[in-house]
Image (cartoon, rainbow, N blue to C red):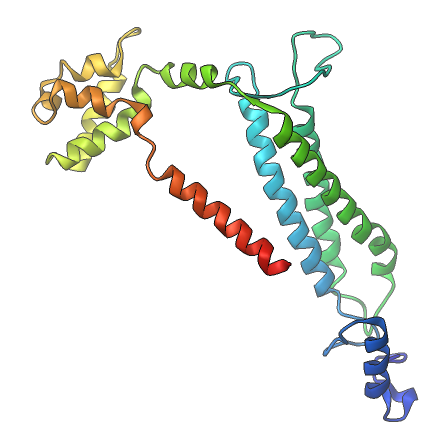
Length: 261
């Protein structure tokens, strides 16, 4: 419609009207700023947004893969699967791995989309060939990743016993923050509390727990009783505002989806 260089000269002053008619017929909005072709920044933005979505899916999949390692073992994918042809004990997170693998391709396509923005003079055809691959494949990749994510969420198993085992692995050291905050609340300067706890933990014996070390340290007992130490080291009560944060996240997600619909 816009002619060789985008000025609509061939339509003798009726180009804008014809553009509006054609756009209305096709159900499209005409570009307010264009040369012979539509500017490619819109395509680049689309591909970038989809790549961000892919990376968010990858973020979750990576966490599943990390927690599925035998030495952690808190999450794994259920169902029959062959983890390795030579190591029968392996149980690979194949769905999560596929999500992460596709995310790498999705992110790489952003470079192509950005390279298509600067076209020579009014336009050249360097974008044309790759966009035939770029746009459809980006949607196909995201579609497969979403399918895999739904499958992953439906098939993962959470090993609560493994979580408890990992929490107890360092014999209370993971609760050092809670002890530090409690000491600060009781009047000990924060930097001093941090320094004392770091020293205590560094000097722990092989089988000694943080609880045992705290209960024999006069600097700690000056501010906390034995019962207070035991209560503060209970990680079952150190959950913060987890419920409100989850509810807030779910609400935000629903609001976004409703705004799209």
